[in-house]
Image 1 (spheres, rainbow, N blue to C red):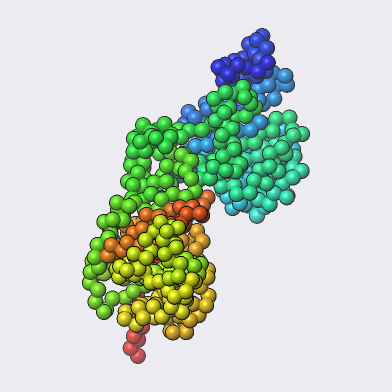
Image 2 (image 1 turned 120 degrees about the vertical axis):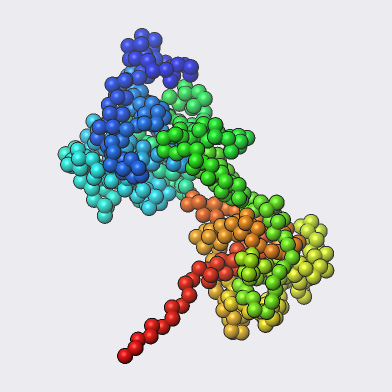
Amino acid sequence: MPLPPKTLWKRISKSEAVEKGYDYYFDQDAADFATGFFENFLVHSKGKFAGKPFELISPWQKEDIIEELFGWKRVVDDTRRFRVGYIEVPKKNGKSTLLSGIGLLLTVADAEPAAEVYIAANSRDQAGIIYRQMAEIVRGSPILAKRLEVVDSRKNIAYVKANSFARVISSDSHTAEGLNIHGLLYDELHSTRDRRLWDAVRYGGISRDQPLICAITTAGSERTGVCWEQHEYALKVMADPSFDPQFFGYITAATPDDDYTDPAVWKAANPSYGHTMDETSFEADVKEAEQSNSKLASFLRYRLNIWCQGENKFLNVNQWDKCCEPWDHMGPDRVWYGGLDLAQTWDCNAFVAVSRGPDDVFDVMCRFWMPGANAHKRSIADNVPYVEWNKDDETGLCLTPGDVCDYDFIKRDILEFCKQRTVKRIAVDPHNSHYLVQQLQAEALDVIGFSQGFSNMNPACRLVETLVAQTRLRTNTNKILTWMAGNAAVKENSDGYIKIVKPSASSPARVDGIIALAMALSLAEEDDAKPPMASPEIVLL
């Protein structure tokens, strides 16, 4: 029979397990061999410990992970008890380095003939991070460097003597079926968007005596998919190990109710606290996180391992309110940059222009357009006072004729705005804007496309966060822009990049003005960052 829950984690000897009829026992010699492999054969490859022996100085690495994974055995055949390991800890705790060491152990020191160890992740580049750490460890270890052949072009580490290897597996799930897996290292499982690769390799070691699948990750942002499934499964096993004695789960995290500014919370969530991180670094991160909602969400997820939804509030409303001051220094010599976000023809369209003042604060001017014929109906359906806002000149809302937005009307408004001011450049979301862009360019305006993908929007969004936190915007209390600032959420991808989105797909809330603001500020900042043209060199003959 399996061990009862209360004793399943108690390290009992084989004789005691046999005597009591248990299925599993703890082999201290095997545990010592595994930790000894790390400390005697491996070296650190990065940071302040680079080149030094891989001493498992953090107790969680030695006692909670390596000894547990490799020390527990099955009574029936003395093979390893655990076949799947799920380890979820915050960033900067050394989990990727630990996974690299596990991979090398499985490749060269697990007494497995022709061991095949595969490194997988959401992308080949992500999997390459673990491979590179393994390769660097090998090159830095005099013992392993003599025995292993590292081929970077193929991302392959071969132990020719035993006909074993460790290599990166393609993210194409169709190539993963049929593999004879002894070890599988899956890095950052939370970033997996296509579960087919995980499903294809999950049972790839069925013909091996003691295969080990080991996934290491930080908390994700989507409570769907394979990582959330493994997270929930791990919690069940941790609460009752008899639920699945062959599944190893290890999760350290704060809870949403914890005080994220409390050092005791930092320490509880981060098992390497005091070894690879300290209070000073957390204090700096907390200070930055308090500047915006999206940075706070990232701090909670990456530093405290709290699962956060993919969409979070973008801006701190109290900080935004401090930016709702009247314009200043609005002279004719000002240089302006514009952002234009066009929605569906029946929806709200936004043009936002910014100009940096002498006091290094950006003044903000807005224009919004909606079809006039359905404005009253939309006001009732969305519970938003579009009609009243149209009567307030300071909002900049125009109701265009008809039941669809008139792009010719928008073009005339923008041209009139540009005639009265020096507008250097306008960024436009290419979606829905091809015709209008051509028309504006035909009027000699410098109009450029500004895609709404993560890589393009991330720096623009971060700039908005910074300027709002520093109170370096003046919005003249524009009611519509303030409403949109309160609506704006951010979606974060697996690389930590963000972009502005609606609170939900079905929400009547609009965020077009904030997107246009981000584009305009990005152009202004980009031009200011460019070095001045060098004066031509004068050569005297």
